[in-house]
Amino acid sequence: MNALGAADTPPADRRAAEWLRREARLIRRPLLRTGLFTALLALSLVAQAWVLAAILTAGVFERASFAQLWPLCGALLVLALLRFVLNLGARRSAVHGAQQLAGALRARLLHEAQALGPLGLRGNASGDLLTRLVDGIEAVLGYFARYLPQAGAAVLVPLLLAVFIFPADWLSGLVLVLTAPLIPLFMVLVGRAAARASEQRYAQLRRLGAAFVDALGGLVTLRQLGAAERCAARLESESEAYRLLSLEVLRVAFLSSLVLEFFAMVSIAIVAVLIGFRLLWGELALHDGLFVLLLAPEFYLQLRGLGALRHTRMDAVAAAEQLATLETEAAAAPAHFAGATAVRCDRPPEIRLERVTYLHRGRGAGLHECSLTIRPAQLTALVGPSGSGKSTLLNLLLGFVAPDQGRILLDGVDLTECDVRQWRDGIAWVPQSTHVFEGTVRENLLLANGEADAAAVSRALKTSGLAAVLARLPHGEDTVLGERGVGLSGGQLQRLALARALVRERARVWLLDEPTAHLDRDGARELQASIRAAAASRTVLMAVHRLSAARAADWVVVLDGGRVVEQGPPEHLQRTGGAFSALLQAELS
Image (cartoon, rainbow, N blue to C red):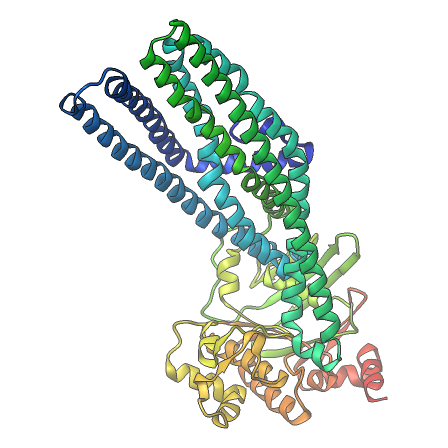
């Protein structure tokens, strides 16, 4: 039987089975070591059965003295200890290899998820992605640590036992060999229904994880809108559906175990009856009969153990399908930024877009033939209505996607030829919604630069205006924040985002997406002053919706429909009565 169960793999699961087979090659040595332990364990089992049969024959039927049986009893004890050591070695080898693979797999998949970027992961809920990387890999871990070694033992141990059973009693060996295939046959028949139930269960787990994480993140908003009870009812419904699917998987698993136990017991009973009659007729030696009878249950034990772990394989196949999908998405993403040209970090660069076009797959043009220049030591504002392409432009500059046409030049060097990691290392990114992890303010701030000293932290907090806020809190910088910034207001979170940018003193490029969101007019004015001061030594691009912030910039780029319709100093654009002036009038009206 194939260790991966290919015989009963439905077409929908073939990719998952191939993915599992490929990953298994990465831990070939631990698996081979486990197989060696298993083979030695089977041989020690044969020796133990032979010794026990000799003790029973000599002690019960030949009335041998204890002095005569003592060497055999000592050998039996040694063999029992040897089996314990070999079994422990096989389990430890399998678990150690599986844990190594799980760690490497989690790191690789996390890297691929990061490589996809926010645009590539747009269709994946955060809870769904967490379920894949945590619960999915845990399911795969069980497959490699338990099911795969057991599958190898289910093939290896019966073969080795048959080698010793046939010389002792060929008829019993023939019965065992003929009845053994019935167990995997019924595993296949019952396993098809179980596989479908397991896939449905894992899909429901993903939905439940996505719903829970989304509800947790928006708990405050749900309470404000009076929708918390509806959300709780939805979570209860999803949980109940998951419970029912889990019970269905268990029902099929118990049915499978019952079938396997039934055929194993019937086969052992047949062997026992045949041995009994042949002993009665004098056609079989007593020692050989006892030896075969002791090995018969062990012959089926590994197959029964494999059947008991069928649900482990089914969970792993369902999880592997989703992990393989994530890898496929990452592999299908265009291979951008393969170059290794070093990016200068000692001075702010000039960023120039030359007829850049980027197409959103299935949604038309995000940008169309955009040409603009973002100069160092000046504040450039990016304005335009929703859907005009501002976020797309920022994603292009962050290296999450590459242009379909045109070029993005950094001091004359094409961005696609640069080392994108080094480029991102020199960027301070302030998103519209700041993500804050559970921990102190200082810990969240140091995520941007773990090497920042106390003086740098103090300067960043003071410049961003967050120092005055923390001064009113009893623990100051050591104030513990909840997940997603519970404990600070929206405006204070924006100040924390700016402080993160400020603490990245090596960052020569600032990209800001509506940095004054959630701030009142006075707070926005203070934050704009801090940004303008930082722009004197950096290249700063700021996407804004409040046009008052754009009026304070040195250069304004107006986007509409993915095109640059106007650009220039804000005073000049306001006088010309073009797109920028129209946006200003619409905001004031």
